[in-house]
Amino acid sequence: MINMYEVSETNKMIEHENLDVRTITLGISLLDCIDSDLERLNRKIYDKITTTAKELVATGQEIEKEFGIPIVNKRISVTPIAIAGAAACKSPDDFVEIAKTLDRAAKEVGVNFIGGYTALVSKAMTKSDENLIRSIPQALSQTERICSSVNVGSTRTGINMDAVRLCGEMVKATAEATKDKDSLGCAKLVIFCNAPDDNPFMAGAFLGVTEADAVINVGVSGPGVVKKALEKVRGKGFEELCETIKKTAFKVTRVGQLVAGEASKRLGVPFGIVDLSLAPTPSVGDSVAEILEEIGLESVGAPGTTAALALLNDQVKKGGVMASSYVGGLSGAFIPVSEDQGMIDAVNAGALTLEKLEAMTCVCSVGLDMIAIPGKTSASTISGIIADEMAIGMVNQKTTAVRLIPVIGKDVGDTAEFGGLLGYAPIMPVNEFGCETFISRKGRIPAPIHSFKN
Image 1 (tube, one colour):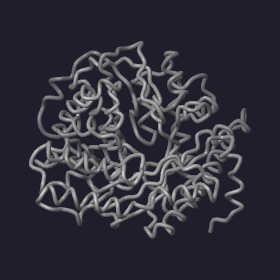
Image 2: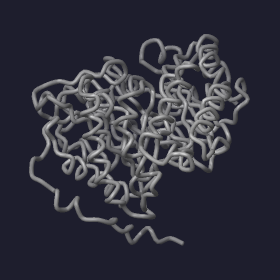
Image 3: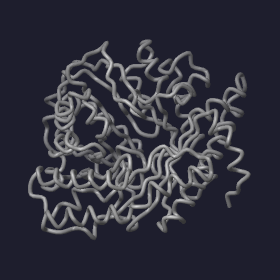
Image 4: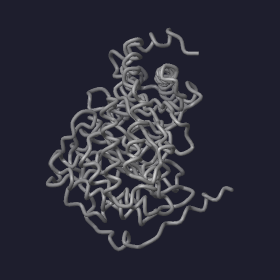
């Protein structure tokens, strides 16, 4: 049981160390909304979301006030729209109509984002999947709160390279469609391998088809808390270092467990998981990069960075699983560039490159996240970067993702401004040697030999 003593113990973390509950995400199944008539489908979707989520924001605010725990975002995830819209949508334009309906519903209930504008195509694409993917640029440019994701690979099925090629084209098209906002649409589009279906964090959240009709998932975050704790063990050995991270992750996760339990009880919705990912913000003192530097690096990106990140990620997970029986989602350390001031500083100093970030993704929670690249970068190069990251996830049996932002009209040396939690990012150089012939091959990369476990 969680008691008030544990809550009071975290007061200092909340007030001085940037501890927060990053999101309460209400998952809503749209399977019972499926209809062959597009107008009826949109009406059912709107009614289902606005009815199920009508108390979400108010409940989150009540919990914030009662326990003094900041809850930064209230969000919704829905059944992948490529599935929910398959019977009614015959073209990309039809899917855009659903995107607009989702956006209106999100605005009506007051949530920050709604995720699930999603296609799951790790082995092959249906016509519905392809139409949704092709609709993404238009959908993200004509809505405010929609987040989109595509799962193009898994350890069990391999990598769907046809989908990888198409996603590279859609990333570039989304950048063009939102170029007046520094290609902001791409910040709401993530390409996955091994996507979890209980992830509360955007842009990759969607409700898996094996989930309940509605479910509460909570994502907590505390890079600043971990950084402060590690300051007390400077010069100590690895045992003390690891124990400190584990104990801190335990406390952070208990806060998430408390909020999840309260939200579940008050909304009458089952509790799903707590995601204990260390998700940074642009705020000073809320940086995963600063944790790695506290561990002993002159700058993130220096030799030893990947080892330090592996240590951090593992200890966060070990501490978290002791604090909650239902840890899920991604759970570990995020390494976005634009959302982490320490990462931005390392890029500007020349210590951190795209290639080093790719190496780090072998051991972190997600992958190449919120990275601004030159707007002139070709679609095939973007697809190549996606393919590399998907291969890391497939072979290592872990979730990996790519959220690249080719900022139209900007080049290396410029800065892209996204605002809010998305922050800003220096434009990072990309290897200019081509891979178009490779990306143009049709079919899929087979699953690795260790995928055969039946």
